[in-house]
Length: 172
Image (cartoon, rainbow, N blue to C red):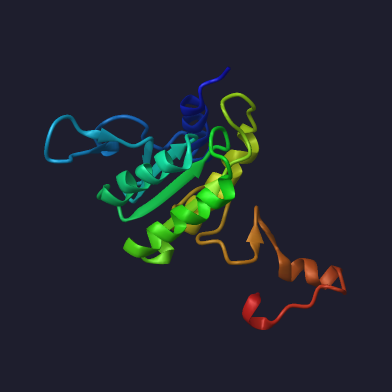
């Protein structure tokens, strides 16, 4: 049985080419009483990152930690380990973020791997994509990535080669 927390931190580091901070003062939260809380990582003094694998109620508590973190952008990575329905949990977290943050300032993604069943390369790509959408400057991609671009493939180029793909100009 692997550690979900360790797996999540490996994904964060792989996605950011080892540039994320997973310890130190940038991952601490001062609640004004007692010891500080901690999130799982930060990136470029702009993005607070949390990895969660627990049940939905506990995941929603982690959303509060991200909202209270002083960095303006928030990234929540969900590992489908203990939650009953990761997609429902994702949507719940997005609705909570929408109450406190502009839509462009957060992303919630469900990773495919866990500490027990790793898929680190694919999860790192998804995490890097989400960071780019939040405005992060990462090698290997454009900043920011458009609505219909995924992992460097843009649908406009595909639609020229595949005649049955019809797109409105507003979607390209």
